[in-house]
Image 1 (cartoon, helix red, strand yellow):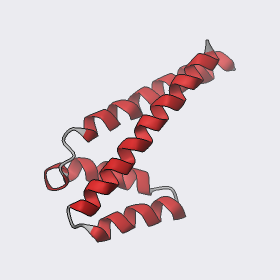
Image 2 (spheres, rainbow, N blue to C red):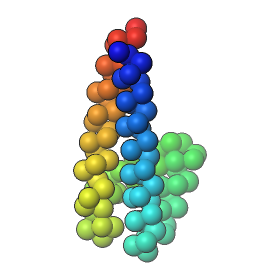
Image 3 (cartoon, rainbow, N blue to C red):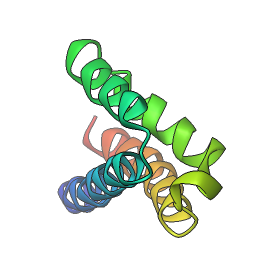
Image 4 (cartoon, helix red, strand yellow):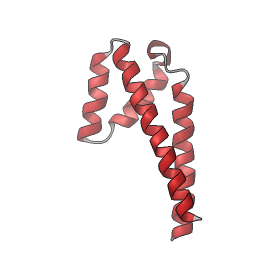
Length: 92
């Protein structure tokens, strides 16, 4: 059961990654190149780029047009915490 939850957690992680990439694309398409670069550089340097992208996707959802992406990404993050926590509990 724990292994199945790990696989499900991996699939949810892929959904989250796809949402991240879509939001980054929307940021660049909206002309906010500086924010897009900040998100990518901070992701590579210290890992905070995903959090920055997530917050900016919600804060500027009108400007970036992320109305459909952000609820999916939020759901994926919440499900990821729940599923991976359950998998950890079952495997330990």
